[in-house]
Amino acid sequence: MTETPRDPDPPRPPGAPREEDLDAPDPPTPPDTPSTPDVQDEPGTTEPPD
Image 1 (cartoon, rainbow, N blue to C red):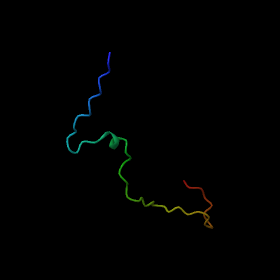
Image 2: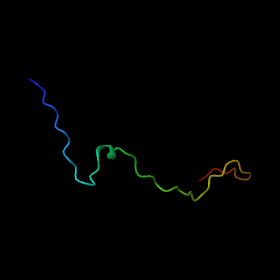
Image 3: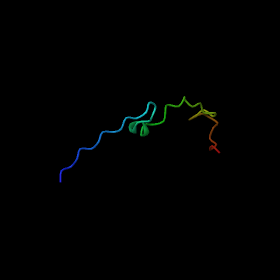
Image 4: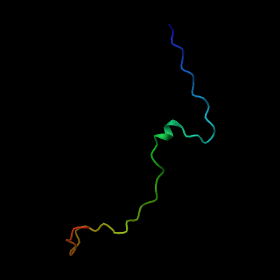
């Protein structure tokens, strides 16, 4: 019994996501601006964050 070659992928309609796109990470998000800036080693801030 001979193996039949695998049929090529059917043509996708324009705009259809490709398999490699499905695994791609989400589009880059704009740089997030934290409401509370990370301040480290500043005198007077020994209280743990809530």
